[in-house]
Picture 1 (cartoon, rainbow, N blue to C red):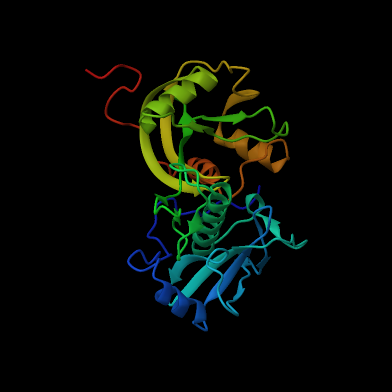
Picture 2 (tube, rainbow, N blue to C red; picture 1 turned 45 degrees about the horizontal axis):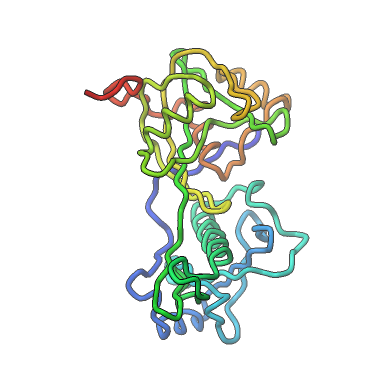
Length: 300
């Protein structure tokens, strides 16, 4: 079985985003010229170069281009910047195939999310005119002064357990036959996350969520999701909607371990909150999914 995820779902941020002066030109010039400053290159396919289990980043050299070199924040006394590398590097690795320690994870998730948003939003949604990146990179501004801020797509992701503490693992149509993950789906406009949890599980599996507990969140910048993680209890039998999933089944802990060991089951990458939820369930570290009221019934 591959190494368990040691992801801290809820933790103190390692990256100081310098909110008070991150768009100050002089402050950013000083940060860029700091001998300790680092520049993280993200390749065209969101891959990164690693060595000895850590991100490889170079020094900041020359004059900063504030339309390419995004300021991420400061870790300790080290300023960090990110740039899209236009040339792919053969040694670069996909973020879906690596495990990162907490600081590197926070840096690379922030970098990929920011770069993807800037690249996909070149014009102002209010007036349609071209926008420029602000000095630090947290927003864009058009000639009329309209500021545009990044959009995040909220989604729920849940370790859904039955009354015997078995977990639901599902497969999308586009996945390989042995690949499985927990249930997830996007929150619709005007919908609370807990309602999305109940709806998505019912739509995809016909199971009824009776109780749930929020566990933690993870930015998943492919391209701009924010995953709200839950552990939930469900009743009923699984009947997969063909337009939603290819298949879904309930697994015991022994079944998951045995099938992973023999290669019959592939779990999500260790970088993901999906894997963190599964690993926590395997280790019996998930909190009890008891919300205090029945989510299957309308509130009084």
